[in-house]
Image 1 (spheres, chains in turn yellow, cyan):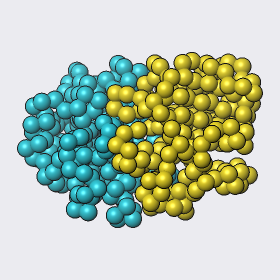
Image 2: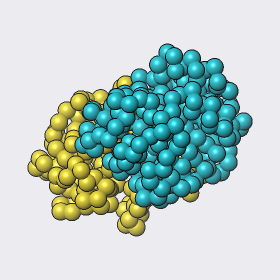
Image 3: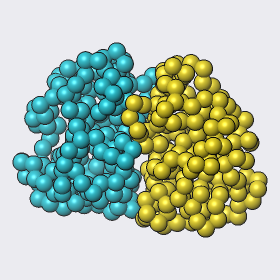
Image 4: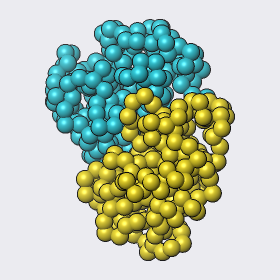
Amino acid sequence: MRAFLIVGNKAVTKPFNLNDLAGGAGRMDLLCRCVAQALFISHGIRKDVEVYLLLLGPPEPPKAILIKGSEVRYMAPDERNIAGIIRKALSVEAGKQWHKSSPGVYVAKKGLEELLDEIPYRIVYLREDGEDIREVAPQIYDVLFVLGDHIGLGEDDEKIVVEKAWKIVSVSPLSLQADQCIVIVHYELDRITGTS
Amino acid sequence: MRAFLIVGNKAVTKPFNLNDLAGGAGRMDLLCRCVAQALFISHGIRKDVEVYLLLLGPPEPPKAILIKGSEVRYMAPDERNIAGIIRKALSVEAGKQWHKSSPGVYVAKKGLEELLDEIPYRIVYLREDGEDIREVAPQIYDVLFVLGDHIGLGEDDEKIVVEKAWKIVSVSPLSLQADQCIVIVHYELDRITGTS
């Protein structure tokens, strides 16, 4: 299994306007791109991928959304389609347990620490000063990759992640966008496994 | 210089509805993602990149759009923002010469062969059965990478590209989406140059 957790520091926790993903929805566009890059290949979905989104924006943070590649249906890779699926998840009541909002999509009222403790994979924190992904890729399986959004992780959140991380890994000599990091993680792992 | 040419077989050649990029606009969402992945890094734009879009959909194919990373302004990486810039380019009169529609964005009435003859870089055609990008990356500079959209290149177009190509290169053991291929090309080249 390959799992990704993307922290959306400003991403709203209520239904939002699909025409204003980058503005009023708190950079929901960025999270949608992360979902697309984690799940899609050409004409198909990676079934062994789980994507967790942690939304920390108003009015009811935190909320977590889980999308399972093995179960998801009716998803296209464009931002607007994925945003519609997230919006639907935010329209249902979120409790402490995961609640299914559409096929393969779940929502819950969970924070960072709870998520990290619950997800049964080793944690890799993607950060620019980490070990080279190419060096560590052969050791990586059943891993949760944790990524910040355009403003990274907050100080307290980063402390939590670093404390629980198995490794801190870097994916490029440049500072890239979160969705680009996901593409590179898949690429390096695909080169080893020959598939996802 | 790194240049990318993405062929949009169905992408419309007139202004379109920003709320229907994946449908009525002929998979314009896919082209927008290619532009974003070609040009953006975290909090910045790659200045040494040029993106060419070849639009082959109705009503007036072909039309070509050129976006220069060194000149572009006011662009964000979300699909809707980039689509707005493309729509503006499609609203101006397109002639045989490039016409600027906004900073760094140009439109012209050009077909595939004319574009390939005009662009002054060696041509690399990205196809699944090509040479491994990792092997050829050290030789790659001042190259135009040619990519098909979700349906690839048409038979006649592919013949033209193959005939003019310096190399045919593969970027993954899996069949990936065009924008993912662009991320991987940048990644492999960045690892060599340390920057774009």
